[in-house]
Image 1 (tube, one colour):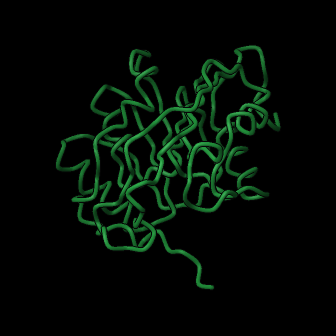
Image 2 (image 1 turned 90 degrees about the vertical axis):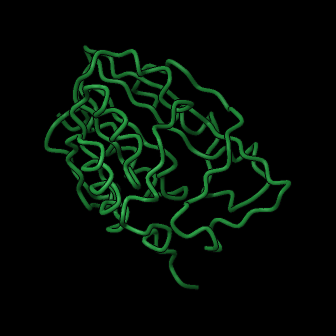
Length: 211
């Protein structure tokens, strides 16, 4: 079986950048702007939307064409975002952030997912907020179960953080406009689109992992 290549879902010219996901980020848009990190930023819609709201943003994604699209779109919007091609499983932050987001970017269950979540926690400053959205294993009738999450899984994995919100919500279908005919984006009309959204905060009196 061939390994899925996320580059196959992007054009790289900015036309596949979507707007900021207000369903995912609506609860944190009133935070005072600071430094943000978007892990698995894709074509950069969330990172650009935050930059337009005054945030200093770093976007990380392993797909070169995704980062190409993100850079095109940021330039077209007149905002500065630091985009970097890197795997969120192995990337190590050299700074900490007031806001870390992960939007449908986690690897399947197992050591790689654990490593990606450890990356997110390491990037989070004391008092910082982590927002994560992933497909709900208990609410979807499509896909591979190990690619999805449950609310309990995420809240347990983030047990060293203060959980502010954890819920399963209905969401609109997420297709990549760059390649709408890609097998990864083909779904039946009856497919259910349900996501787990978790918002957590690192207490100010808890040290960074590994410190």
